[in-house]
Image (cartoon, rainbow, N blue to C red; front, side):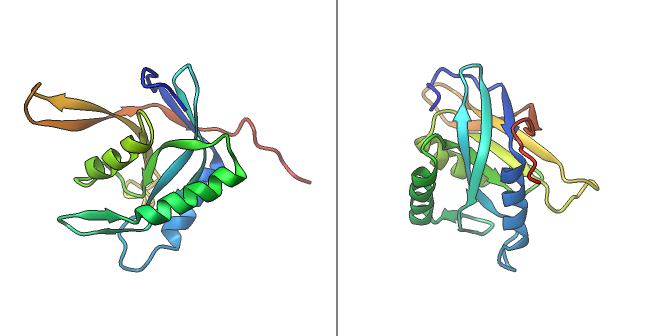
Length: 168
């Protein structure tokens, strides 16, 4: 896992993680507007986050609140750790075109699990005619000793196809 001093500069996301996000959106409950989940991978010393895997976390979201199924998230992480001990939590994803009001609450949950979690959004509704993706890091803002909040800053990202192996 990255140290607290690691500054995230870029996100490389494996196609299998992207496919999992899209598949999760397609299989969501009818009443769910979006899907959220945990991103797994590693943070390199040079500030590159490599996302190699992910899983969906069931949640209930209303206009006023959001609730994650934390027990499910812990169980899924335990299963993934048994299969791949090199993957750690690196952040979370949401199938939406932007950061929402609930993003801060969800991000705080992932900040407990890892230093400097990334937030990755995928516009599965293709609002601009394409499936836009964005990666973010957060920074605390506010008055020292007073009210603080988070600001999400976009960072570069790309699909990592270097390590793909073709079968055949």
